[in-house]
Length: 116
Image (cartoon, rainbow, N blue to C red; front, side):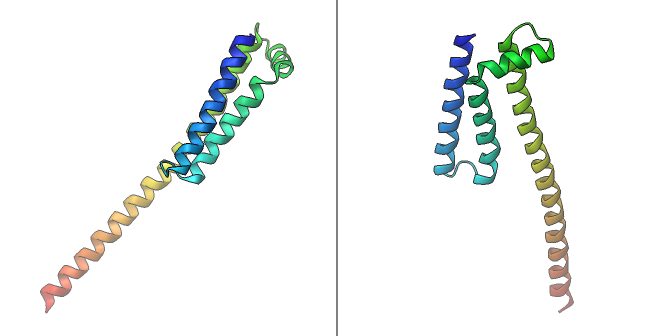
């Protein structure tokens, strides 16, 4: 179990460093990096709290505490992916509305030039 917790700690720290470097280089917007940083910090805290994982494994009826860590990690990232799905859907709807407005404006400009 200690090996898994150490691996999760290293991966969490690597994810935090990677996110901060991406924000610094403008590869990812700050508002989107918050979700990833939150997920990485949650995993870092969970990987350092062996007692909580053992309690959670017993509470969930799981045979091993590392399994509880894996389930929590997957749950955290599922929440992050859901949040991004909502954001992408909103951006797609805004893109469609903007495209329609541009088409209407182009039509109005063409009719104005033809009318002269």
